Length: 430
Image (cartoon, rainbow, N blue to C red; front, side, top):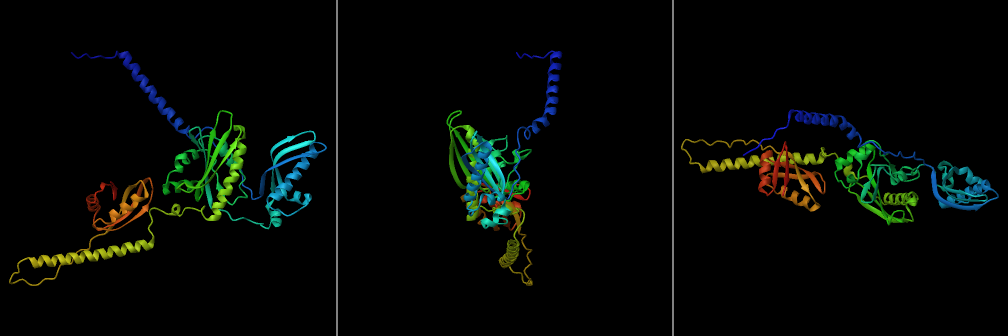
């Protein structure tokens, strides 16, 4: 026996009212939830780059008759150390003072008669360049989009929230560097465009859109992997420099500090090492814009287009010749009639040769070669060339075929491919 249950009318009304209220709340909260993905504690604007000569990390420990005298002696000592560090000739303290545009106090402790500090000295390039023998502008790299990635505690962080690694790069004075760093603030939609997953993405079209968004020519990635031995204890950091849409490895190094409070200072030292690595790669010719980022997927080189047209004309002529020969064989096979008059072979219409787009999965490089070879050996195919490569994803080739798209699909299926036909395009797999 089947039993049927029904809710009282009052309860049904309450349930419907609750569902309606939930729908209204979802519609109201929807935009807020979407906006929350790009809001929050994000965004650190980069400092304005200066072309002056910045020498940091100068340590001084001097004594004087009073705090002011000790500080003055410390600053003069820092100027001499910084000038020697950049290979300047011997100058008096007065001459050095005229070349200094600013003194940056990184850390300072002042006593009654002692001054201990870590300072940075900034020399005016226009005035100091004459002594250093390299006045004027320095050759720089193409604009490079900087992606600072922090890996710690099983998480990967770029712009999702403010962090010390992003802040260190934002505050880095890159005016004297040969690398033209493009440093996004991380505010707004930056955290959605530049993510840790994007670093491993090989799609040139996707990278081209992101680089155009920031006015950059290529990308460099600065990775900081932190390992905390225990809370409040020593921290070991592995730093890795990569570049390009293929995430190519450049170099790496390891630094260690006694506690988390020293991490910002470690980051500053690491950035100097990164800049040296990138400048060395620029000098070696490794750090340069990837040419595939400037290729448009929809355009064909004029020389290649001429070859395609010539191939189509040759194929049309060959097809007409084959039809004429077939017509002659058919005429010879038919019994001759006494009154039959010799007739000329009919002129065969040329076969239309078309170019079609074919997508195919490319988990590795060998798959590309194997798929291209199989497609080129398919009957009726006049040529096949890749127009977009994505190792680990889906690549695209342009196939020139003497027939329709359906006939090409049947020919590829006969070669053992699984074929899915779309609008003027095919997708094949095995």
